[in-house]
Image (tube, rainbow, N blue to C red; front, side, top):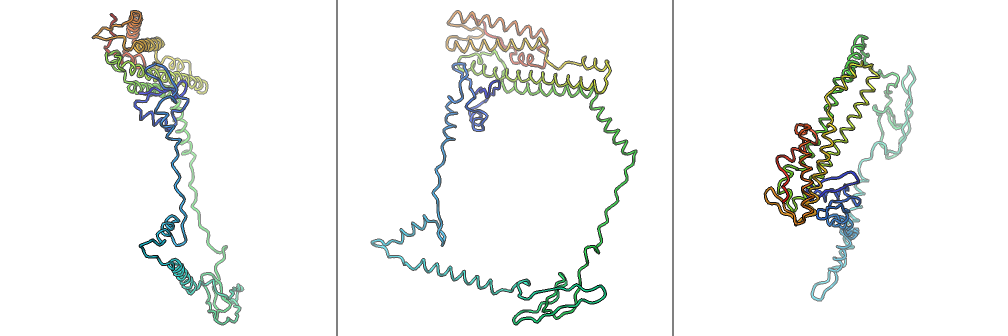
Length: 407
């Protein structure tokens, strides 16, 4: 596990090196981040981590650019042409290739190109490609249209009247012409009539919306939203404590000098971070809903009885006594784990007893052990065992385990 401080005040726990590498590549962990060093129990820069160095060195290496390939007229790259020219050079035992193959290929290509152009030009021409000019004479209201005729030139085709466009060729021999209808004579589409809106229906719709707004701003709805916000914050705290994995906190495997105490201390740091965020969210919820109640009481004209009902609600925030006890308990447990980390290799745990090589270390451990026991008893007496907040979750993590006695 890797405990990384992304920026001052924000820490993240990565369970494996793959998660840490992914965070470095995504940019979540940069050169300003720090990682907790287990052996020295200190925060060091992430740039000193070997995995960070390897990822940064790999990102700086650029792949070699591919050689540029230029293509010749007859297809094939310049590189292939170079090979072909080398193959065409005479050798001592092989035959000399013919030099007339390239000019022959160019001649065949030119012949095919000219044949295609000739076929394209010999096809039928579109109607607008003729040389004659067309004109149309608009008829009067009560007489047939007079068509102007012109003598067609030799080789030109006679165009007939086009009923679709109303254009008449001067070389046409037809005298019939049907003019298109004018724009003003075309019938306009009829729009449907708008439905009538009854005053009673409009009043009922508006009154329904007003009633829904009043119901959403009622005291019961406000208390329900307040409880839901606290429940959501507590659910996120419980999920974070499960990720920290603090079950059987004072078990012998968690206090052993072979790496167990270091992992336990990192898990405790992650749990402390989740608890800190949870308390910030609780303070934000309390502030926001208190401001909302003050504004709504002024706008809606709440009676003093309704205002007293809000202040007499069941509090969702952790009690101040339990908040102090859980904070001091976290600090004492971290102090014990720090002492065991400093005395790594200089103490032994046998059953429910622990022996230190240095008497001073044993005395400090004993004082911390007795303080932790007193804090746990005080938290249980204050109702922390049945609390759904951080105090209750810490007591669940301790469970039935106890710190070994010093000898």
